[in-house]
Length: 382
Image (cartoon, rainbow, N blue to C red; front, side, top):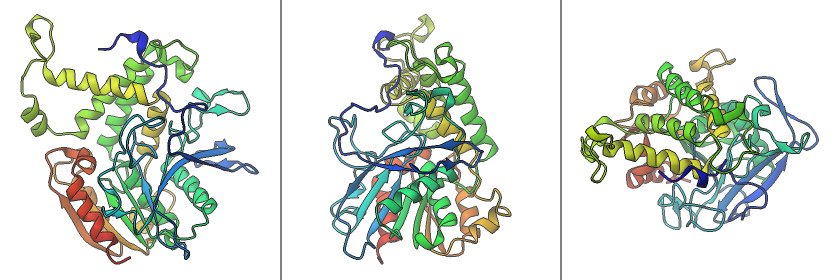
């Protein structure tokens, strides 16, 4: 692994860093955003990126919502301000499934994120220091309220479609329930109506891994030196997550019981799959923030579209738009039964489209061709 002295305290984007393609909107300047759990935030900055052109009628806008460790950079190359190629680069662009010759595509970084939108690594205007441990509890519903306020700043009354997978799918669903008049069409991929006990268990283990790192300091680690942040805890959390995002069959096919290079496990060396998990854990530490991982994981645990609405069936019955539901055949984190539950309760949908993949939950990112076909069909009649 890279010597600890080189790992940053946080991989968050911060003021003064190259903005890349990001644009910024400031919300709730005159009143606080009152959160579902009782906290408040003001003001709230939203970092976002756009592709294509908004037409004169302002009715060709598509909202794309990212997953846990995603960001606003859904498409485009890496470069200053963007450490990697867009996470849905093969799906968004001219002539692609979300065709930027037809649509004005918008992707915001989520509330609680670490890529320009207000989150734990952002500076608290009251203390002039990062929020850290003082960042309040947020939910998927809170995130969508922020996205709705952000939509108002763009002058968009109604999206042509809202599209998302995993945590982005949770938000797409919440959009369709909370603002049905603004969502005539939604594409919901690889998620369910509420977090299951196993999902909560897996997320809670990842949270504990981060919070148990002595360098986490209760969330107030931002003044530490490089290498002295909670990167080890986040690396472990990412490893736990990575196992749940993929499948036993894929791991066995890719790694089997192979050794890493010439290392011999019986002599203290690593299996190849161990090296893979270490690599992905440390890679995340370079581009993400430990507090954000905790905050967003908790938001996903609290996901329950039926909370305060008379239950899941009553909540989903509020949806008035056309909904496309898709799941990954091998997804063990958000298994297909959860998508079938949505299909049974959402009024206007055409059933569950199953994307065949050995990659498990991450299939919504890796199976670009199959996912693209699902989205193309969903947007064909716009």
